[in-house]
Image 1 (cartoon, rainbow, N blue to C red):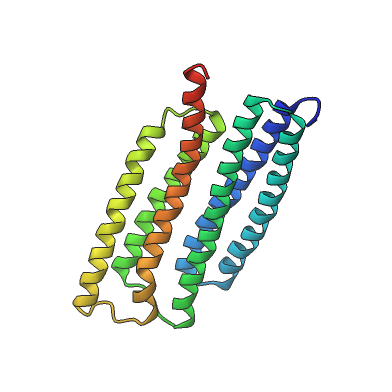
Image 2: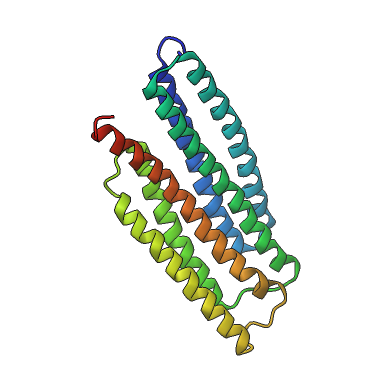
Length: 220
């Protein structure tokens, strides 16, 4: 397929990348489950999903390279190759960050500590926005349609705002002696920044699509 029909091979690579995106979403959802359940099974699932993502990352990257080599100097194939590779790397990074989240939560589990009720609500609010953003970002990639891109950028700004707001609330809780845990209070800020970084990678996926759509619509 690669030699005869490189465009079709690229579509296959895209289909596999979308499968990777689904696995990453499941990983992030499971990290949130672990936050609440504190069940080692959820922790293990995130680690298993990370292995699956790494395997797909290697396979897709290798496949894309073969397509690129076989296509000669096709500008269209080169553009799609670069875009798809960037998207794959963003999803791979999201999966890494999801494992970071469960490792942070695991510190509180092993320390026999819990986040305060307010802290849990703030984390859950960020998760809700994050998962919604990732769903819309994946749809932009799937449909090659950047219509929802501007709204996604607005949500990225809102995510930055609530991260700052929740960080300030946390420092106030520390000052008021409400958060006096050793591990939970120290990792909370890391949790917020990790969720915000995952959102950034989600927006990067849509940004790659938006750039490609703009190039084609301007006649390049």
